[in-house]
Image 1: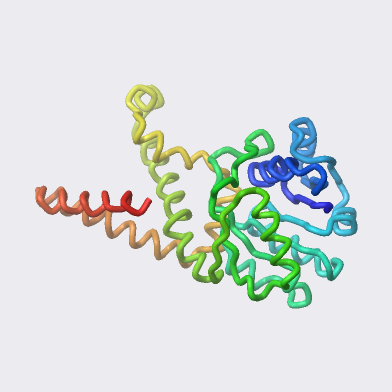
Image 2: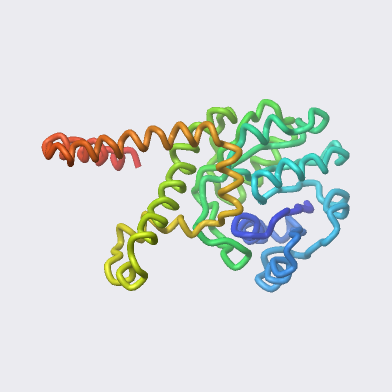
Length: 277
């Protein structure tokens, strides 16, 4: 099976590494506009070969997986309108509703919209990890709009990379993702900026402990990718930020009022999150 991976950064590179564990089953053809990424992907053995011609990917790959920013996914799927009717297209976008609704009707059955709930703050081919998807949730959205063949092929690939598949609607996914993933990234960016604007680098290095490093880690994520995600999931993100701000203002008010008992109870309620996780 020829698989074309469009985008050879963390997600695409890690996918290539995971699928190359099945050399007799998959042949991986990589595609990326970035010439440095092309070179690194070959050097790191993330793919079997590189194509610089998108038409070659369309012609020779029965499965095309889009591991590129969410706005680029929409643009790229539009370029696949004339693809063979037996093909399977899988997107790995972090927001799903806008992508799902933008897919041309003529090829809607060929597309499986998925979101792997995994990643790191690093990006580019050198960030690739061979077990990035192992035991991680793979959310498949609006699967009833995809053909049986396409769903079966996607599920087989997800099984091979050891991901755990769950199903939900695209709108439902985006609201949940805003709270679980997108808003925490906004908070991390805000935390990093608030500290950088108050403290010099010497103090940050001297005083930053594990808590600050953990909370600010994802502020190192790609601005290009996250700007697109914030744009596509704008309404849900705004709602999640508003809810977060209310909790911050509640904390601020309890501290101002010296209401330590209420503050203690508020912290205990937050502790219960780890009973779920």
